[in-house]
Image (tube, rainbow, N blue to C red; front, side):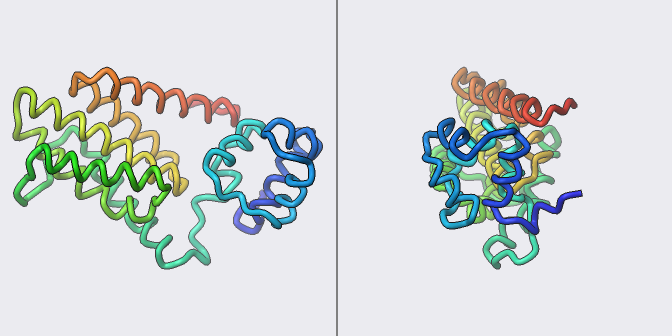
Amino acid sequence: MVHFAEESDGARVRRFRKRAGLTQAELGARIGRTQGWVSMLEFDQVVLDSVSLINSFARELRVHPNELTGRPYRHGSTPAEDCGHAAIPEIRRQVQRHDLAPDWDGPVRSVDELAVAVAEMTALRQKASYTVLGEKVSAVLAELHAACDASTGHDQERSFGLLAVAYREADAVAYGLGYEDLSILATSCVRWAAARSGDRYLAAIGDYLRVRELWSMALRGTTR
């Protein structure tokens, strides 16, 4: 059994490239890079730090993106990274109880105020700040759950729409930190909340995330 955590990103790319039967030049051509750049990456002279680049490598090497980065991996992580992983159990709890009674004892902010909170989380996702995002997600999910339960009509639809986006951010944390099973659960919740929001755009996002899951499974040649 190969222990991914003992390898660098470059070493993993080299191993998967050889398994795929590709030369450095062939792999470089597929992702728009030179043979020399791929060589430097494999010997850790450049850093694999772009989400789009990681996804490009994963697609061409037919592996899950997390396999390239060795996630989830806790040993030797920074205190900030530990905080990101530490947030996962509460995020998981909130996601798993999406169809139960709300778990929120405090006052619920207005829909407009909650929209601002969700927009802040979306900005964190766009910056790939998964650790900071992870610390915020569970509380916002719980409050939005309560908002959906307490509201009616248009406000309820808006609340479900915001909840769908919040589940999307929970998915980003799970996927970014390497918790694929939680990512799958969060994606299901995105679709569940989107269906209650009446927003076709949000429903399309849920469908996209579902396709991403199927694509990832196809890359690994697995079924569920």
